Image (tube, rainbow, N blue to C red):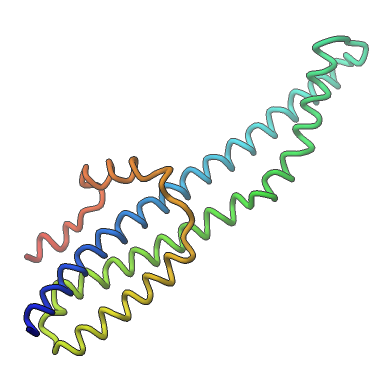
Length: 172
């Protein structure tokens, strides 16, 4: 019975290890996408500011129609960009996502260790360590944003071998 229970925990550790891998990869991708969005917001703000300055330097205040409305639109855009960036907390969110992804990576390694060497423990110690890892996983999942938007991309990267543990393969 104890051996079967250890085997069941080992299989569950393997499943949770893979879950942590996918979650951390999705979080890294979300962070990357968030940084890109922040860069786009900054570039748009700079380009719009340059266009407004150019229009002012050209002294085209007497322009009518589309030119005048585009000038007003760009002015509003430049004025709103810092507010948009601050509202969505783009830089802080990227940093928070990276920290959370790192925590999932650490937990992934904990499950990997439990899977590999945990079965050599006494059953009660093995189960205790496993339950501690599950408790940590539950805590991290409660902090995790929705990652389904990048799941397919994460799946492709994982299956391509981008996140393999070559040092583990060499050690075996």
